[in-house]
Each structure stands twice: as C-alpha cells, then as structure tokens.
Image 1 (cartoon, rainbow, N blue to C red):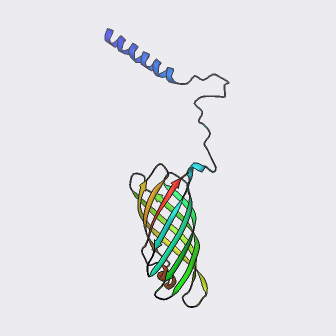
Image 2: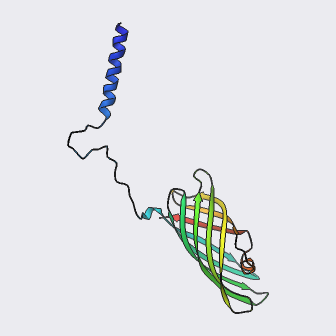
Image 3: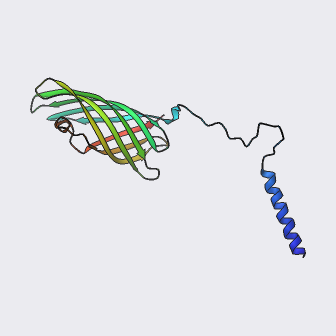
Length: 188
C-alpha cells in the first residue's frame, strides 16, 4: 500500500513540475508569452543571390561570355532569378565576328542533402545571321541539372548540363546540345 501511495505522490509531483513549466495566464491579459511572433513577410535581402558565369576560349575561335545573374530564394530549396548575357564571338577561319546579347529568366531546385540541382530557363538572345548582316531574336528553353558545391548557407558553385528544347539551326550554330555551364551563386 505504501508503494502505491508513494507512486501516486511521485506521479502527482511530477505532473505539478510539468505544469510549472507552462507560462502562466492571467485572465484579461492579452499579452501572452506563448503567442507566436509575427512572421516576416515581404522582401528579405538575406534571400538574394548574385553570381553568374564567365566563358573564355581563345584560338581560331575566340569566345568571351559575361553572364551576370540575380536570384531570390523563394524557399530554402527554390531559387528564381534573372540574368543578362553578352558574348563576343570571332572565327578567324571564316574572318567573322559578332556580338550576341540577351536575357534570361531561370528557376533552380537545390536538393537539400545532395550535391545536385535542377534547372529550367527561358532565354532570348539577339544574334547576327551569318552573311546576312540581319539580326534576329531566338528564344531558347533549357532544361537540365547539375552539381553544386556549397560555400556557405546561400552560396554555391555549380556545373550544369542543359538541353535546349527549342533548338533551331541558328541556336545549333551558337550552342549545341548539351550546353555546359560553370558558375557561382553568392548569397548576400
């Protein structure tokens, strides 16, 4: 019997200790410490990334590309962004040179515990057609993925393999499938 009473007393005492950990509520007091803090909404500079890629090839064909990007993390794993690109292309064999420029809108999904990412992108570029001296706009739709190496919470290096789903003879001349990109994304 003593064991049963001791067990009930220990149980009640334990429940009393647990109850003491709860915040006290006073009738009529609207400022409760258990109320959740208001969630941040709107734009957060901590979710912004800057980066992009550079491309350099010298020799019979000279290819210089500058492609800065700005991105925003919608969630911990989803990054959306915009970018511009400029390419100087020169082929000494055909005595031909041109400038290619345009913009892009992209989305990336970064796998949380894996070194992989998925990438989709729509790009519009303006190119000079060979021999015609006429400039045309080309719309490219890229889909693919790649590897990432984190350098901090929101920063990473990436290597992408992308396929142009809207490949034309003009885009094939500029970049053949798959398009390989190496770049960086740096969180602010």
